[in-house]
Length: 341
Image 1 (tube, rainbow, N blue to C red):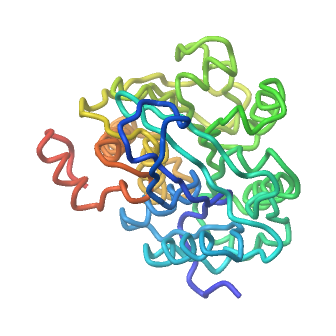
Image 2: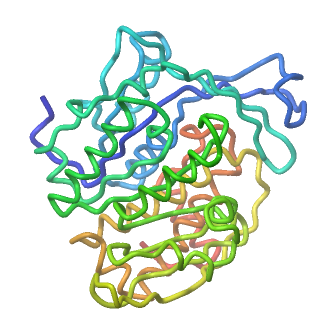
């Protein structure tokens, strides 16, 4: 049974093991011979990042009853993430992602995930009473690539909406895990009306609407959306924040927050780090984060912190191992002239 205490942030989806090539062989996995293990999976990364920033977090998902699943469960628990709804599935293996790093930390991925434990998450694995006490539910789209995890994700989003919990989405698109690009696009576009907070990379925006520009992102806005962010790496983040109540006539305030120039070693966890820091700020401004998105100064301060957290993360290897502690973020912002916590 879930514990009595309720987390502010619940993430749902895949936890997997990254096997990262340790040689400087370029971006091709075909040339790699040695790999280092690192806990990963976008929703799991977000949970750990937010926990390191002081947010009560929980992860909902499945891992295999195998050594890799044991490693993931222990890693999340050691980070203070509530794992009471992380199931060990004896009938499936934990998913693996092989990763090679090229220049500037860019990555080449290859997944072993067909029939993996995370795809077997069921609607019954989602505890409605537990979810109802959270401020934010965060999901990705890898859980939409198979059943029953697709139904579990949609069920969780419906429950969150019923109880007034903010629904957050970072698609984290991996097109090779979908039957076709068209199937991936349709799944994301179908999901968008269900969420209040959306983060896209510039590449994902171009994939969805054919244009990476912020003005093109207005086509994705809907009355229930509070905030849409388009991340651009060292270029920072563009955003559209809703002005006024959730209604058909809502208007959108556009803005840009510059990024930080760092030497990138591994970009694997950059987007997840950004989301972790943004959701940490969102959870600090309940109900629903509306107070944050409606306050231009507070929102841009939160986005600057998110940019800084992502910048620090890419200076290290791995996903979860690279996520900074809160003290490191504060020191970096102080050095860079950022706002206090």
